[in-house]
Image 1 (cartoon, rainbow, N blue to C red):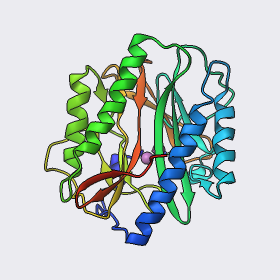
Image 2: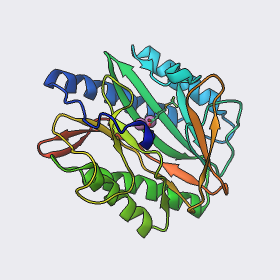
Image 3: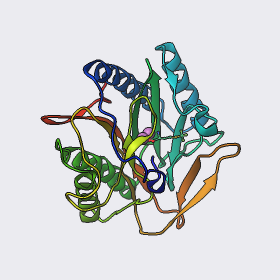
Length: 263
Ligand code: MF3
Ligand code: CO
Ligand code: CO
């Protein structure tokens, strides 16, 4: 996530050297493997705290750190956002039940660099509505990534995401989106899930960003909740409709996008 209002000062992405790109690829791969590993445990009866511990232990056992833990006071190692939770759901005693959908968002920190990826998982058998929004969120992310071109703009990404989401009958979250990533967890620029082609910030070869659209079933506004002792908020849809999200960390190359968070 990146709040649109937090990033109107320095809109330039940091360009990574060849060596830095190798480190980004290494941490990206680890984050993807951590997400895949943790996702295997998603089933009715497991608590989100148990998922947090699984991801936490996996990350440490591979010599990395879970970036969320202690980030702006955030208390856990991953985010787990169930059903109508849009993002930054905090793992706890909640027991996942048949029919839920849960977004698991993993960020690893290794050798000074961040890899950030998330996926929405089905808890047992889910409704057709739940499947539809989850598949649409995944495809919207893919469309956004495919829209990346060297010297294109963040608006190209947002336009492609929103076009697909709308066509599928869903609504994108505008206030929160993707971000530059590297030595910093959240770097400039803001990567919106809506926008106009050719608008926004320039996509430069050697830059690394996340593409992470959140799709909602309705256009109801979102409600934010404070996390105690933290500057991070978690968000729900005000009418409790479903929300789904996927996220990849992507390198912009002279030939187009290269997804770094692949196992
Ligand atoms: N991983 C989230 C993102 O995609 C950020 C989580 S920040 C936390 O940007 F503090 F909530 F963990
Ligand atoms: Co992110
Ligand atoms: Co994330």
